[in-house]
Image (cartoon, rainbow, N blue to C red):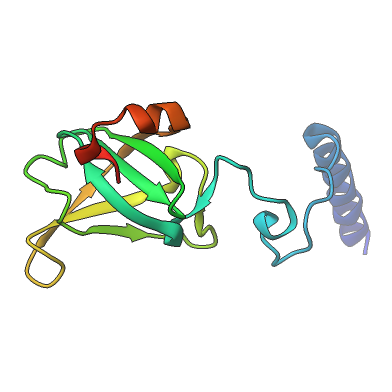
Length: 147
């Protein structure tokens, strides 16, 4: 009996020490099971990945994408995954679980398929940077690079 009481007092002391160590609990967020994206409005620089309508390959490292037929983004790849790819080759975009939109380069999982979806080889690309172009920058693009 004394051992059980001693163990309970020791456990309570350890729990008290842990609460002081970790500080205050985080501020309340969305209810469990509801993604924060469903509660907070999406930023202007974010877009749903399923809204990508067209793309153009500029060089071995750069791709331009058009979103909702109005916004254009420049995607810079970490390697030369776009070498030998043309703008007619399809791009494959996988949505990360629980996050169907992109706000930064890390949110994009892109592969390019040389030779089409059925017979092509999908090459993954690591997106190093993503930047929305201004209307003036889009207008300054050569016509063959506008998505």
